[in-house]
Image (cartoon, rainbow, N blue to C red; front, top):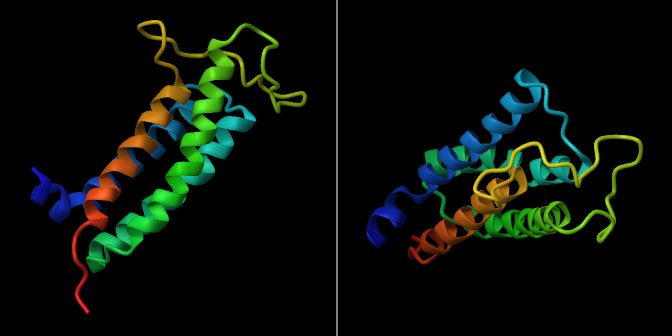
Length: 141
């Protein structure tokens, strides 16, 4: 399994980031769910990874792992804050929304804890772990 992740990790990263990005576009563009400011910040750290993974996978460039980990760690931090903001009692944490959609508003809740920020958190965490496998692959000189 480890060798599979090392060999196909860049393509898997591309598929995961592309799928997650497509889901955000479909939910806001087609279903009409307006993204809050924290959602936009999470998207800002997810969308570029689609392009980076595509280029890296085509070139078999594993050096992208470090960049993906950095982007995903920031996105993960935002997603954690956003999820806690939604799950905490109203007014516990500040919401950066000014006149727009409240970051504390829950549009999707399944099993009592799965929200959009939790899905983003899962995608970022998956990409971090995946890139740790890819990064452990020795690079050619």
